[in-house]
Image 1 (cartoon, one colour):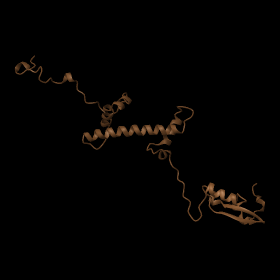
Image 2 (cartoon, rainbow, N blue to C red; image 1 turned 90 degrees about the vertical axis):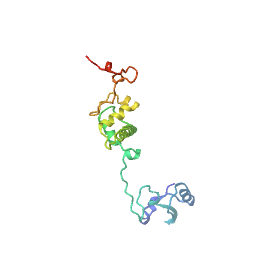
Image 3 (cartoon, rainbow, N blue to C red; image 1 turned 90 degrees about the horizontal axis):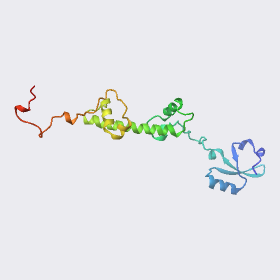
Image 4 (cartoon, rainbow, N blue to C red; image 1 turned 180 degrees about the horizontal axis):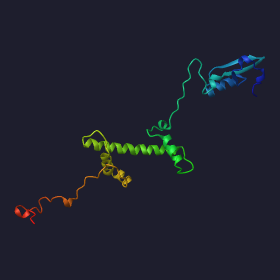
Length: 190
């Protein structure tokens, strides 16, 4: 039975009273890992008490400043650079569905971050091939069109100022060796 709290004086009112026997104290220390456990006589009865600071999960530690709990963004929890909260807000405000799950914006942010990293890596390689340090739309287009999977994903996209892939039809190129004639007959006189 729980201890009758009316017998407790004000001097010890800041303690929790859990156990009345030594066995209870030992069990508490073993199972919960409780710290400061005491035994005291109050009005002729033996009671066990445990300090509140030893069982409280988020209470202030005595003698130490409490560590301030800073807000941690969902992006940092997921290890992403793309904003999970903003994507969640956009999904909710666009009314794609009545409800949006907690994992949906995280998954979407991860996919978008992966695609952006892939395109930027290929565009950076294209810029490096042209001895440039700045990525311009031309290099983004070259990166997308030269990659089979990205080209299939973004086949219908138009990139402003991207231009086109360098391509010359082989029939338009001058033939070498086979049908080439030497002399005045090879000229195109009209």
